[in-house]
Length: 161
Image (cartoon, rainbow, N blue to C red; front, side, top):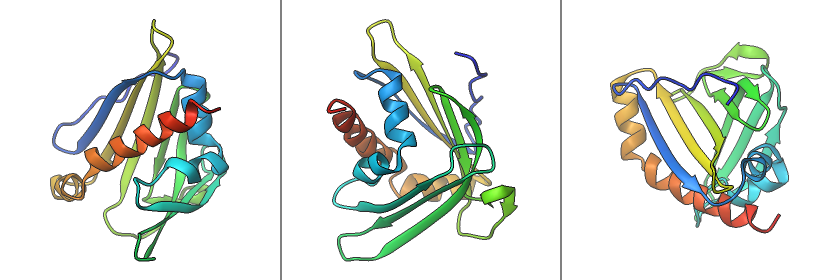
């Protein structure tokens, strides 16, 4: 690991940690290739028809999620940190080029990947929030269930790569 892991603030952060049976390079590829992100990012029956990635600090990370009813949720953010194969961090509080942007419940996401001795990946996703109320809202929206289901979809896809 070439980065310092995020130190969790239990009042403001929520995390998902799992060991998955695919290597970190495939998890990384699934997270950083727009054509792959569209296949797993939203928990079914939602879908992600659009993904844009400019993989560099200050670069754009945009997804559009679509509900089964056809409602679309456009999420544009800015990459903060990119450590090849190991760590991605982005925020919805900033747009491309680190420009501040308004939006409901801004958060910062950190994805950390570490190879395991079994050839798999220790996967850690952290969502950092501005307030305990935002954390509660994100948790109540189903962060753990939704991000867990999306991770299952990512793993299934990675096994086909």
